[in-house]
Length: 332
Ligand SMILES: NC(=O)c1ccc[n+]([C@@H]2O[C@H](COP(=O)([O-])OP(=O)(O)OC[C@H]3O[C@@H](n4cnc5c(N)ncnc54)[C@H](O)[C@@H]3O)[C@@H](O)[C@H]2O)c1
Image 1 (cartoon, rainbow, N blue to C red):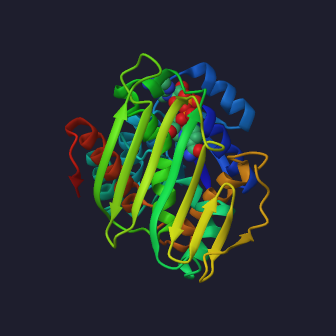
Image 2 (tube, helix red, strand yellow; image 1 turned 45 degrees about the vertical axis):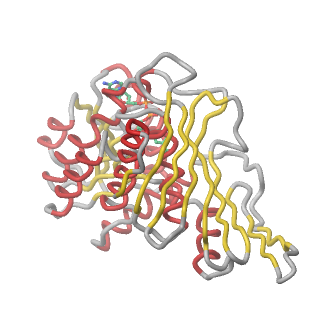
């Protein structure tokens, strides 16, 4: 598997390490900044350096492109690669908005190449542990969920805080993790409606840093989701989700289920995972994600999360921003 990377920042280094751990050939890197590109190439022993994705694709010899650039480059870079027959792992959020995500879905449908949208929490052992129990019916019928993607006393800088590069702020950056995780835990229901209150309260930028979102899913479950940067408090580490069912609750971070008997007495079923975990986003999460994508490519099967899952999340994000602007419920 010959793999290339676009972007040489935080997440690209993690993906490059994953590619190394999986024994792939790291063949090319793309960045507009030659200095950080040279440093990345040296760190990972990559021979080819390109100023843009088009140049890299024309040179050929690449099977997989990892898109780890600012969000405004995700759609153009992924679509160019898919059209050239190169498989793409694109970072979340998939694009600036649902319209771009739809164009990516079309490109992946019309190409022989595959597209994975890096909603990495679907590969987390604790998320998978809870999902298996929820799907087996241990919690009864799930009625509502509560979750968040929040940075307390911290927030990103640079392109993340400019709407033209990022599309949105904490919702597009952190809230989307909580949205995708709960959707995965619930078995990928379609959103029926979204109501949101979103604002900018902690710094001076043109994106959001505070959000509360309510998603009503087809089938009747309601999800309450918080997104934030620079929040003065967070209930735990940067993300957690709870599922509330008719026979108990399930939680990730800390990860357990608690069932209730006829008298309401709770029994905790521990997962065995340490809490808090040493590293909230360990390298092994990204190794599992890339390993899964390589398996999909070898077996020529559509990856999940793919374009459809990424697009669904972008529709929810777009609807939340629209709801916050209009103060109305947005029906999807
Ligand atoms: N799944 C996860 O856990 C996770 C974690 C972090 C970031 N991400 C996603 O990965 C993507 C990249 O995030 P990151 O944290 O690696 O960002 P970063 O700022 O560390 O790196 C961005 C890279 O893109 C390059 N770049 C190209 N054009 C640019 C421009 N106009 N302005 C700024 N940089 C430009 C930079 O040189 C840099 O190499 C984002 O979409 C982000 O949401 C995902």
